[in-house]
Image (cartoon, rainbow, N blue to C red; front, side, top):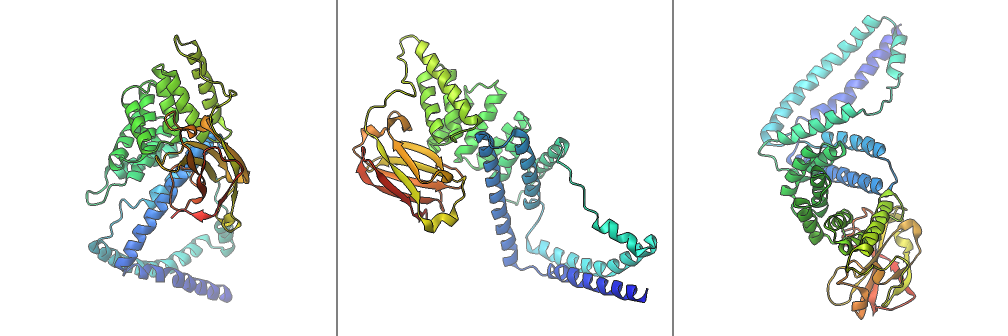
Length: 423
């Protein structure tokens, strides 16, 4: 038993040696450390926001189910609540108070740990009885809908009660809005999107998501404010997949079947090759073509198999071996042509995956983004390929790129190597 007490005391001393230094170090945080904490939180929130967008992309492509998305979203939102320091202050006064609290905590820990250990032993009466309790694994339980609702409510309360001296966080409001939308609480989602939109008016994805929620509140009608938000989103990002899909729905609703075909065809070029979202676009395009064919005084649009007049670009896209470590199989590859002189918007575009490399491609008027901007209307073009880990059609720093040009609009057997990083 003497050996037991010696070991017990040694373990208590070791525990205090591990616990007390971090507690005492908290007593004197520097200003630079405070800034580091803020920067770290911002970086972590950005990562969590990207993970939420990836969940939406995976759901749209059919790679995960709605239940799997809800489960993953619940986990991310729990981490958001941990990272979102809405109740933490970093002012000198707060640091001073924290320092005093840390010192008192250190003393309390130093006294309470030994008392707790010996009191626990005296109560249990058998050292062996401690081991099964300490080593017993915690049961693994799934997050319930009630827990998800509680987390969303907690997030909303923190945002509503945020101190006036702290800057507003559009990303947090966007996460709250998406959470409400996933729970089909559309009135609350609309209010949260309105808050987020006021803080980030140039976010095209935010505008498209807001329009979608407002349409749900109007019985899935895109008329009025939803259509205005969609137009703003496309003005900011002409290749926003959701905005294009919703614009097609708005055009179909007002019986502009040609416009619906144009928007949905553009969305189809940017959508994943397979999945429920892509299948839905195909069904919508078929319905629009059928409606256009039966509309009085309206010529039937060309079918998918109809020949496309005008020049065509063709070739292959490959990845430089030096960049192979920077990509993942599911990263998106955009292959596009733009005018050598003129508008920067792509004249034709294809969407593929890194796993498909090397990719043989063909660009012509059937892959045009707009009837007004087609490959056949320009003599010389620049052909490029861009790898986007986020799947965002708009160029971002860190994207991998490769391009050729200017070349003629009918150039063949082009060899594009993705060999540089977007600054």
